[in-house]
Amino acid sequence: MSFSESDFSSNEELDNIQVGDATVDVVGSVCRVSDNFDCKGAKNKYIKIVLNNNAGRQIQVTAWNNLTHLLEEIKEIDKIVYVGNVKAQKVTRSIYNHGNMDIELIVKENSCIEVCGSISKSSTSSQVVSCSIIDAYSRIGAKVEMDAYIKNSLRFFKNQEFVFYVGAITDGEHKLEIKINTDHVEIPLDKGDSVHVVGVMERYPPGPPVLNLESENGITIIEKKVLDFDSVYNGYRNKL
Image (tube, rainbow, N blue to C red):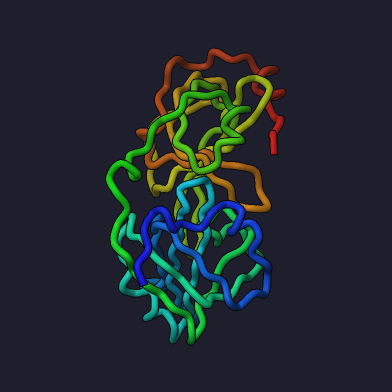
């Protein structure tokens, strides 16, 4: 079989996948690959890839234990991949879900996995959209930039799969969580700091959308502590 970008699964097709369906077919481009092979003490081994339909949906595909070999050849981002005869499963712990849908696809013994080339360079170049926090909530999958204020300073988190920093920005009314996938951040951020941020809007159901920054270079301090405490405190609203 041969697939191209014109064959990518649509939002409607992905949204209509039913939990428990063991005959799901999806086409998309790889935007993330991970495994736990280097994690000592892990009882179960896995490989996870995330397929992007380039229209705002990203769905996780997972192979466990003796089936990891079906995904082990997929190591490059932007490869076009077809997964067939996989089973749809409800995401039970969002922290382990790399996609932005509330379901993931589980590889079975009779699943079909095919790599069908790479997406074009014009598709991989991300155009940055300037927007407000409230507008960013409707731009899942898009790369956005905005000026805002620090509401919650960055905090370090570590679990079996990830190391990352999480904080939040506000415009004085609305709040947007920000996430940086790194184990070290040097930029000194305090509540009320005026900042410029650039990242990709993602969602990990059942939680609210998150602005994912590639590195700490995605956040720049404009001016220190320019938003008063009351405005920082009151900027808590999420638009879902």
